[in-house]
Length: 114
Image (tube, rainbow, N blue to C red; front, side, top):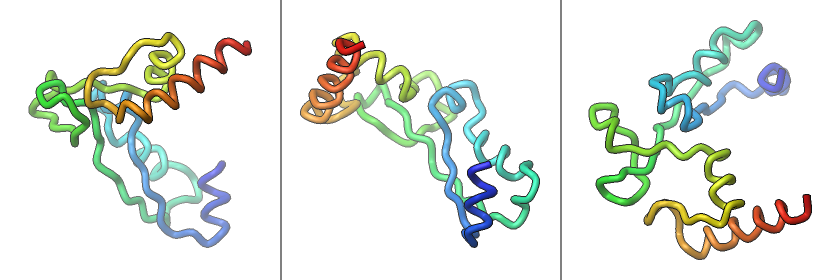
């Protein structure tokens, strides 16, 4: 529905990516496939972007390399929010510590209000 409204607004290009969960299970182009099959979106130019994941061997985020699948940890937004709410720390190098403190504080406070 959203993409059809975008198309009606004369947008001709859409970037798509992948959630970590899709890449983790070998389907990094799911968003692109769905958009190409959607009725009315045949003329939409889809620009994919590269999947990023946490590289356990480098202790930092990196572009995913399928030939080294076991070296990568996919941390979805849902997983990241759950880690923040619980007060746990993400793997070293996943995010700048000051940014993590802000996000973690937000989700802990949100959980406390519920």
